[in-house]
Image (cartoon, rainbow, N blue to C red):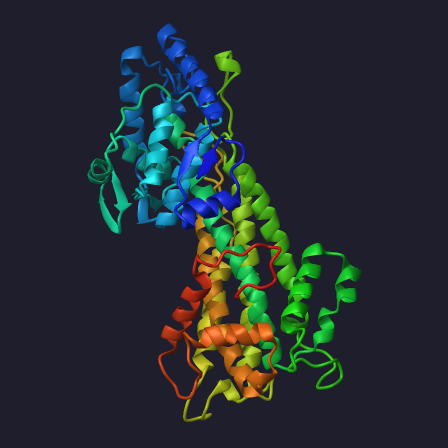
Length: 505
């Protein structure tokens, strides 16, 4: 069981809850803070004080006073009016992450909600009830208002959910689980939607997939090196120590580990003096992606435990301050950076694919075809990879450089961070398919060279790959092969720690 306290949620915890269906609860100390914060809100309402979002309207309506008798209606109207997301829903795992992160943020005790609000959020996680949340419609400042409003609808028995493999009305799923909807009172609607949990949830899931794919790309690249009789000297530790980047040094070390007993690598001068950059510079390029991943992870870990509500309640209600913690700029930059870094993993992979299939660049059979001319072999797989990396270049255009004022210019600068997180996720899916194509081509090339000469690590990887995709002995519908490898690489049963060098046992 994962215990939330608003302070210490980790990626390890997220993996457990998102992929292993670990249950969640809250710490007693965090709930004590929540109760104190709630008393402050109730006092404000009772005394009729003017405090944004509690006894006033929202955004440009912040100057409109709301009386005690209307605070519940205010919160209900807020959720219904703001639930205007459009487009396809977020993946269920992202919706699950969103609910978890919102509960964790509220447990910091700065938001003034009743304990029952947090309890209902955790009920959703533990019952595997996942709100249907449209992906489009957030500006990424004033929080992810539209997406989080669709989440909040479920708490009041409205909206839709994914439950037991079906999409249904929220009230039906709640009823089946014996979970009662709640009536939102002062501040609670605002507290549920004023935050960055949509972009952060999407970012967490994207990061976990990106980290895994980055490790896998090194093993796949190692097999390509064998297929091309690559020069192992380029991965010598002294080269990488001379430059000094930790991540570059680590990539080279893992490549050496994968290939330490290979008979298919060469020394400089044996076949050629130098390899092309897509082989020789793997540690430099992949290492730079790892630098970015480390940056992204650091920002997400902060945001996973951040108070992103407005206003925030401090000192047991003695100090209530309006600020801008809901502004998604830190995550917007991180997501744009993630998209660029993962697009580059695909870019260099596609260049390795070209070297595997182009008869002008290696002595392998043209396009790895069993009968060149009569059969096209991997020719169009390279086309598909080229298309995907080109698409990634458009998706990697930073979303964070744009801003459109909203709420009658009260909210005059926004982050577009949720767009950035969605684009980063799509880049990762495209990159995985490019690397799937490299896997298929590298396996074919390695077989041509002689699998008995492969390293033990790459040989094991090839054997598992061949359980899904057979050798190319004649032309077939390769789309199915690409998707089979893609699904295998994405399989969430493989959890990878950065200290591991062996991915597949």
